[in-house]
Image 1 (cartoon, rainbow, N blue to C red):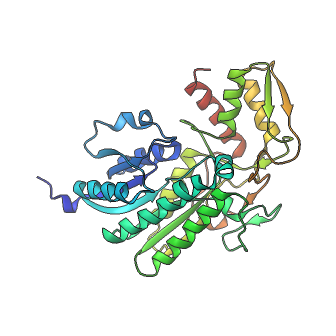
Image 2 (cartoon, rainbow, N blue to C red):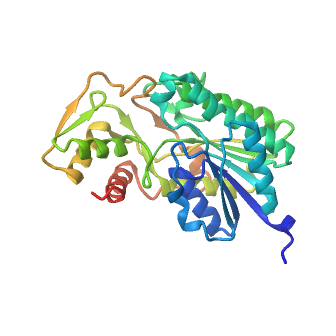
Image 3 (cartoon, rainbow, N blue to C red):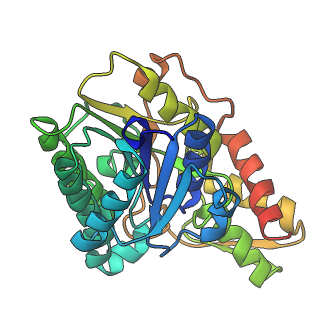
Length: 328
């Protein structure tokens, strides 16, 4: 019988979401024992159902913004072995909902970080991988966004709470964490999608096949990364043995992205080529939307990593994956 203290456990928060489900599969393929936790506000159990009979996988339902739920999660994870790392992907992913109600991001994006760090301290878990966002930079126009740029002035509650989480993680590194990697995500695409522009466009066309309504004038330009490339980038950084105690990394493609207009046209081509596009006004899709940003990924490339797909290829691939997911 194996001594459970010798079994390394990866705890994945927000595991039943789009990215979390892919991460769980990757960690299981590495031979890790994975404890997956989600509150299922957006994540779906079915995204992880292929793992339920795997003895190295355990799925928990818990709200990690609540202390009792977080304590329960870590206690259950500790029963599986020694928790060696926490992957914190738990957050509200609906930026516009967070603008309408700031409590959503306070609870789901920031308090999850507060409670996870408290539990990590209690259980002596000293390695954290955190999913942050380009939203922490705010709207800096055409400036290339590198990790040392500042000041950081987010324009959404989501971005503000991600930035607050980064600050709290940095403070925790002083005495409680040996390693904290903060990954600043770009727009990530693929399936199984729970939200995002491609997901929204396809759903809109299913509801109204004749016309696709686009928020904003379509000139918004975003870089997109396929979820498979995102996972490989995080694993590449994690594998680097000389990673500093606090590591901030922009993850993204090397190109400058594609416009919303181009993305809308690609969706129409796949779903209904006869549909018309109706654009809104202005270059913002919603309050808190950053219409254009361009990452510097030089630091990430220094790890020897490059994406397999550029923005255009990632979008086309994701359109087909999501359309197939929805039976289109």
